[in-house]
Image 1 (tube, helix red, strand yellow):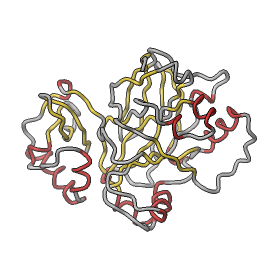
Image 2 (spheres, rainbow, N blue to C red):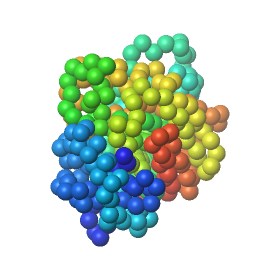
Image 3 (spheres, helix red, strand yellow):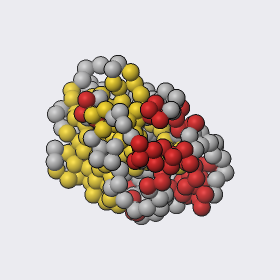
Image 4 (cartoon, one colour):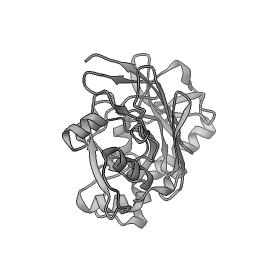
Length: 298
C-alpha cells in the first residue's frame, strides 16, 4: 500500500493511493483519526495496515483525483533529524575519495552515520532551492529511506522487519563546498529545502528488508546513477541492529541508507546542479521522486 500526505480544501491530511495511482482516499474515510503521518505511524500496528489494505480493495469509495490535490512529502515534518549513512556503496566511496584527493583503501569496516536536519521535507514535484551565495556546489544523491514503525531498542537483525513501517525515496541533496569547508557533513547536508522525499511510503508488507531494488537518478533525462540496493555495504537489518544498540529508535524515525556512485562530484569536471535542472530519483517497487532546481535568494 502507498500512503501519502496531501493538501485538499486547505487541509493537510493523509491518504492511501488507489491501485492505479489515479486517486487518493483520505484515511478518515476508514475511520482513522490520526491527523498526520507521524501520528498514524505511532498509532498503527501491522495488522491495522493489512485491514486497511483489504478495505481499500473491497469497499473504497470517495476517492479524490490525485491530480487535483497538492502533494506533500509523505512525512512533511520528521520528528527528529534524519539518520543517514555515508559512503555505503563501495563505488561511491571510491568516487568520494577521488573528489577529495584522498587514497582509498577499499575497506569499510564500520558504517558511517551522520544526521540531516530537515525542518520540512520537499515533496515530489517540489522545488530544490539553489542559493548560490550559500553554495555553488549543490549535488544530488538518490537513496532508499526506511521509516521505523515502532520504538525499538537492542533489536536483532533477524527481527528488524517487525519494526519497519515502510520505505520511501529520499534525495540527500548535499552542498559539497560547505562539506569541504567545515570538514564534516552536518551543515552541508542540512540546507533549507534540501531534503526531497516521496512520493509516498510503501508499507513494509510489500518490500522485504533484504530485498535488492534497482536505484537510479537522472538529471534532465540523463542517467547519472544506476545501481542496486543489494550493493549496499551495510544492509538494513544490520544497520537497525547496530543503531538500536546505541540508542532507542522512535516510531517515525527515518534512516536513509546511502547513495550509489554517479553523483555530480564524481564526474571530471564535476556536474553540480544548476538552475532549471530536473532531478528524478527512482527506486524499484517504490516509484520516482521528481524535483526542479530553482535559483533562490534567501
